Image (cartoon, rainbow, N blue to C red; front, side, top):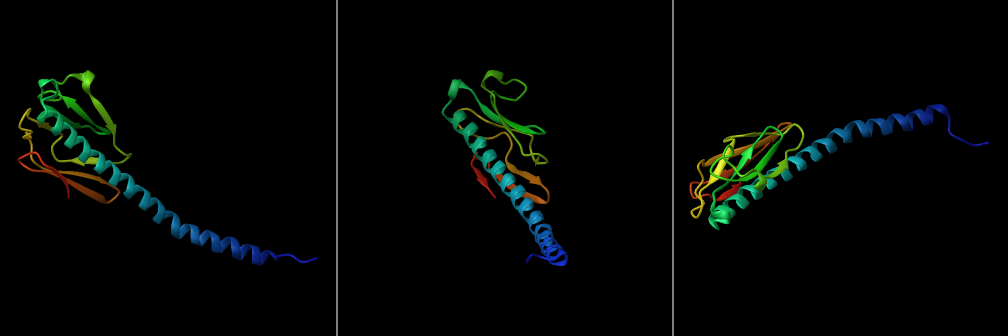
Length: 142
């Protein structure tokens, strides 16, 4: 009868465990980075959407984006506090992600000029991505 000895089986199991210990953290880090990258792209799209709706004067109103602890909201109105809640579009942030910079950006109707220009940072697990808003309201990923 032929088969594998216990030391051979243990050697193969140990080698597989070593490979898994080396590759799983890299895979998880890549997944977290990709998730944060997608969230940053979603923030860029939300800011551009808010500006577009303000420029086209949808509902004759300004539009903005509010950053909360676990989500961000595209809203209609001159501020998040005075918004029209029925027009809110809420987007979740990935678990553990945080947003830095202004917590609210409102684009003026017709002109699309933002009330806050600068950089919004999106970070988690050592990764940080930036989103720039210039004085004219143009939104670019940095």
